[in-house]
Image 1 (tube, rainbow, N blue to C red):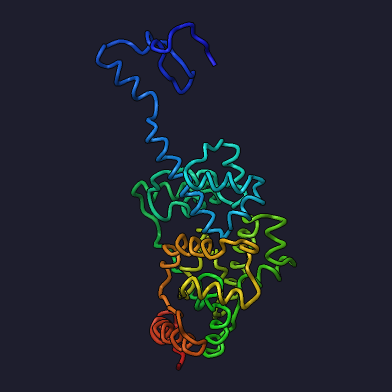
Image 2: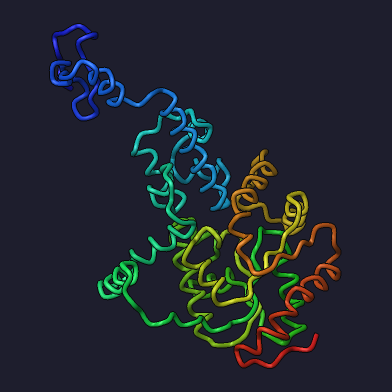
Length: 340
């Protein structure tokens, strides 16, 4: 902090030094007022920034399926402070914001309000982080207008079901797999088997980011089997860009959709309320999760709405939805169409 022995009227705000003499900012008399105004953000602009920051934190938390209480526990920050942050009233420090992003297994920059160039920006960024120097050089050449060999189409691996917990992915997935004669696989079960830990234990030991890495590794091993399957995914898989893109490119993907009340009722019947256990605002959290994930779930090839349907009726609707891939699209992969 640089202290000046001048009256406040003689000082202007400077982001680098806190205060600077007007003599340095002076020059052209008409330019002085403009320069002073541009040196500091207006209160309205700061308020908008904090509101956008709060919205991004709330959206990211919902994508991870975390309640405010769980995020507070994992990050070590009070639930009240996180509520203030999400409401746009939290004058958050960069250190606390980093703790929030780490607790969600997210990158710090994902929480900062900005105009992302494309909806797939996070996926591109993650690919670049994992790319070799040769791959980066090739990408630069393509983006600069150079030529590259045509991308190879991912091998067809079957049908993937996405959606919130309680959508019926496991129940309907088993029924569909039995009907078409394919194997049925639950991705979360694969993660547990490959690592010898439950999902809850993995998250407790390695956090959300560690679980997502194991989830991606488990998916890669499943794809390496080269066998057709009906895959039931975890509800939050859409929050990991690379893994979700692999699902979309390798499977005929179907979003199993239901009303929030039905999701909650089904989850309660299963005796599973994670990650919203003991949370009085569980329904509000569930609605927020669904709202945040809907744009990602809607990227699926097809949508099957199971709201108000019995299990048999929902299974019949799912079978109708997969007829195109089983009877038509399968031929483009050299597969026999399946009689349904």
